[in-house]
Length: 496
Image (tube, rainbow, N blue to C red; front, top):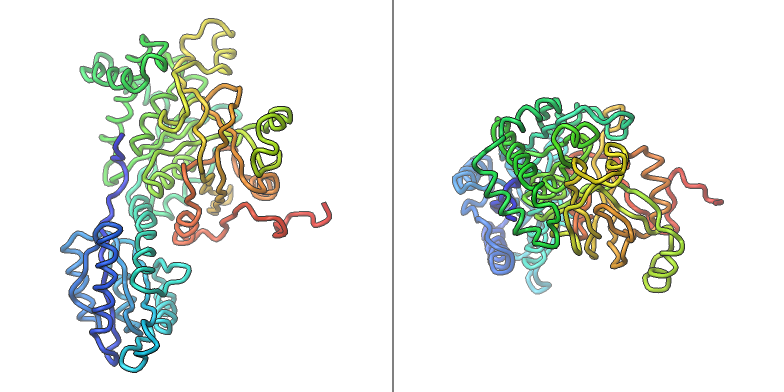
């Protein structure tokens, strides 16, 4: 499905030049970057005005704004003018990246020397004086080819920052009883510029009933049938209920978007939901997230936020999973040991009832929620507990991460890269065997020690570098990761 709920980035580049340096040096270097970038990565808009002073700065900003740029690269082709180059970021409404030119040849270090290596230091100092946020890569100095790579890596970061600046999270609660794990203060959302709309599950039920006999239901049923195929659709009579619910959520998003551009949901899904709606919402949730509209389980507001970040970074479907259960010793010995580079404590099973999109399962089908069936239907023939999308998660690289508020309204985050192993789980739900290097230590000294909830967002690929940069840009001071052997966590017992 097409991602309809994340921004499209149009990036511009402005070159700057200190007035005592040769302006053509900066201009020619900018043109070289644009040539490489346009050939390899897409298109970037070149502002024709090279900025030497504040008047130039205003003219260049008018150019990129007229071109509808929503992200910007400021390029120090030489030392650069400290005030105008930082005022660009102050006056541009969108994420800004700063990079600088490496010197080109030892044969041209008189008129061809730009000193941009030095200029970045003063640029950074002035950004700090003005308290201006900007993205600066790990090593921001390079050739045209190297800088084009950095600009390409900036695009998902820019897309995420733009998306968060116009995001509304819509929740339907309250949380299930004895489910404090997903409870967190909402004030940090406002600190990030994110809107929140909290509703009752009853509001959702009223809207769902109002969609009965909606003429669009038949077309959604057809979509669902085509997606699932005959093997994945054992309950065709259930599809009208789920199609009605999908339309309910999409219409609610459209009508309640308000001043925001993008939406994520955090919805209650048990135990009252199946009783009153007549199905489990998991499959519908999976369909929406495959369009870039996360629907986090169990009113997990920060889970929804994390999913949306992952969607923007990857440009792909994501999921939200419980860091759920250990891998049994016998299963590990038979299927993993001596076949993969992990020990038992590096592995765990990530699970949720059925919200992972079909495109991320090795094979999936609509089934029923076994645990809820025991609770609500006495373990009998399933009816209202049907609607999960179940199957083993497809093998491949993943990034497990979360942005979370503490009880004291402080934002913190974690990022861990790993993989889903091509090993059958022999279990139920949307589930996979995950392997993350040094997961046992990470589990104890990050997830437990820092009191994270059991939900984690999963992006399908290795996106740790971009996520780390995004969390830094957002001002998150505590960004934890799975530390390698020999690198002790502050709480880790060195004698253990």
